[in-house]
Length: 214
Image 1 (tube, rainbow, N blue to C red):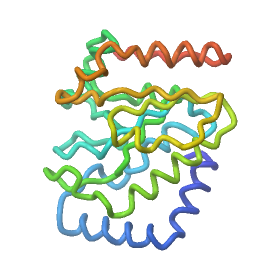
Image 2: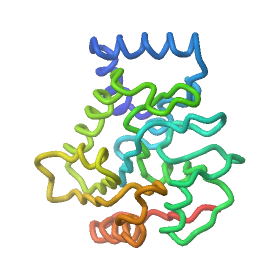
Image 3: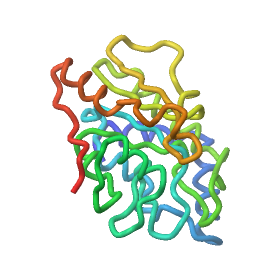
């Protein structure tokens, strides 16, 4: 983990809300199966250093079925069936990769942040309102304050509710419907967000993201 992320997360861990959150997650792991594994909860931070972030994609909570969640929003482990929302993302990109592992994106500067970082098996949103939302709001606030070009992809009303009141001129916000099967036709299909993100990055002298996966 980069020094900047370490400093930010360490500061959060000293707050009272995080002590309550950590105790809750510990108790959940003692009594239930919780995803992702403990060593993958902060995977997005480990794979994408703070000063390398170019694009931020905000998800909701981790996948809740075995072997899926890996600490990156929308991503699943290799060998796992690609979930519908991720299939729709790939369809928008006109690609059909063999795996839904988005690690190559993270290594290029795509910060794949879920709003909630843990979940009980088979119970979506079971760790809602336990403190993760405070934590990830603070993480986003750090990114919103960055004095360099960044792209934020906010899909769906929940993600868009996190948009800052004051937006920096050197940040691009791309908003549309969520890629889930229930909402994908409300704007996600044909949104062109991945092309728009790369155009913005290149216009600001940055290397485009190679979205294509093997």
